[in-house]
Image 1 (cartoon, rainbow, N blue to C red):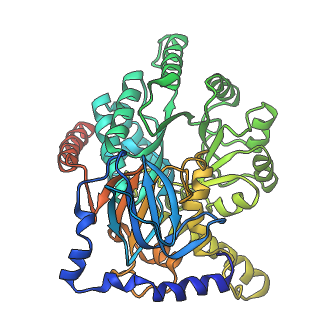
Image 2 (cartoon, helix red, strand yellow; image 1 turned 90 degrees about the vertical axis):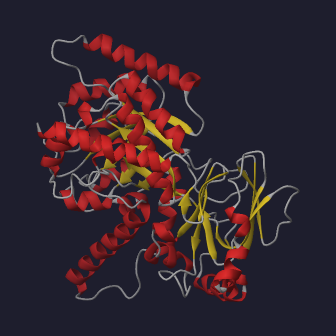
Length: 489
């Protein structure tokens, strides 16, 4: 439903639907949720979500004021107003819940979960000095496994079902294998971006790079866990001289997988004018490239990148705090790029994707309003960016921005079942007037009651179902304290 009439119709119908069932007294509500408290569904057991207000993020299907979602063997089989429960199915009674696709995090340094909170007061320079050089470069494979497991659980708890892990900590094949183990243990859908390792002084760069490439090829050839895809990543030409950076990008291109680079921030020490045009001249501006941040490129370069099929990820909170510049995701999407949002560095920010999407909307409206006031002394009479559009960029468009839109990002039959249920009856969300606004502008991780990844329940009744989660976070706390002490010495 894209028209205002359609939106009002959805809201009116939802008022008549059994949405108020979630407002039952405690005992009755507990009884209604009893089936939700059962054991997590397996991929062999059908799962029926019944009676939710469904935001499919599929423009053909539209939204359902009261709908059911049938999941079988990890895939969405049907979305309709009413679906009979198959024999042996687990049923989630979802009245009073908003069902929608899981959120997509297009850029996060997931292993930095171990350094959570250490960058609270960091600038860009002190972040690199204190986190990258004194923590990231010293993490063992066991550290990376633990931090990726814990970080992925955090993302699931906040409603994210897909992450792109830009892992500067995968500095050896053992580190990469450990990151994959952590992601697999958490059960999240993920892209692991494998980095080119640092070359110690006097070491054989050719041999080290060849080892990394051989290992990456073996992973691509069939050694990846389920739900995980492999990319590569580089700091990129804005950090080093152009020719060595291009040589690295061409070498990684031989793997045939996407490469992610950081570009375009105002404070990058080696920032290069017209970088995207230079990459295009080198044949490297294509649909296997993701540019991250990319705040300061020329408008014609964004259009060129859009024509070439380039992906872009914006991380609004970190970009505005650290001086990268105005987030450009909405402008980049208009220019034709495939766009996602990300959280970036867990050492500074957390809370999943909803805070980032909320901040992105506010930043873009502020940019538009300031320009309008400067030109006419008045702000626009209607917002130029909607809550629905922003949630699209956090789900289906975010999946497209990672090349995964045929797999996830919408509640389309045939796609994998990555679904979240958001409470619409909670103190932060009731009364429900606009479901898109309720999710984007009102809800938080606490209102995300159920998270399903690849057909398996990973969070239910507001809690992670991973029995090992308490031990994972206890080990994370202990190891983080050890690393912080070592960094002080």
